[in-house]
Image (cartoon, rainbow, N blue to C red; front, top):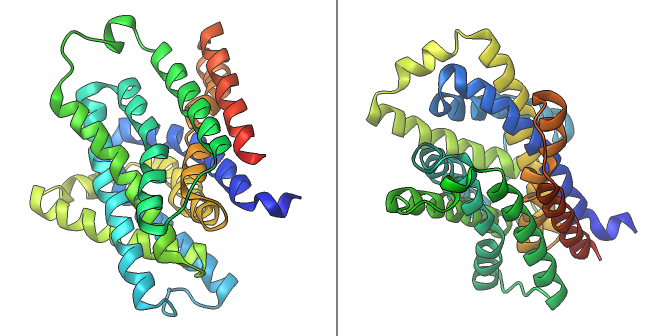
Length: 298
């Protein structure tokens, strides 16, 4: 029974990983800046993956990947890790975290659309209902936790909205193309290729904006590096690899929807660690999201 839901279970495990990694990266970014953390986390994850694939496959590098794997996985890495994350982190500055993550709720339907166009994946009516409930529940939770004045300001910055949509599109393109590029290839080795592309993308960007001195300064902050290492373990290493397992065994739109419940999963640790109160509306939104995710398992 569980084997029939390998993709859905991997997507759920990804969401749990990203819940922890989000908190770790948030803490590290406050100390040394999000741009530096973005690159350093990928380098950490690259090292972890080399060790893991050396023991699991006997190959520390994806030297057995085909040209098709390299091309499309590299493109997906640039779209997701570099372009998508850059747009998202800039949107966080312009719009704020809640509205930015609300726009990230567009990832599942965009992923489903791209997967339909590229790979011909078609979702059932139940899948669409489950997707709608999950995305709606997540959006409701995120929107409720903002101040009313910041949910619907008189004039939203067009630049911020475009950046948020760009972040969602980058993540969706990266996820859909990773499935197309991976095929039957190993998920962890596929993640290596995506991370290599992300590292190259950030490296070129940092040369252009002269950011390398800040990266070297960030490396000296032990607390930030410890948190970045934790985030890299559960994020680009395990989380992203599990996300590829998810899209390999189920429709990309379904996987993206289940992975989108991170804002719901983060409620319990927020209550326990930050002592924040959660309203009835937030709990109802979380329940709707869980019901929607449940439909995707059926």
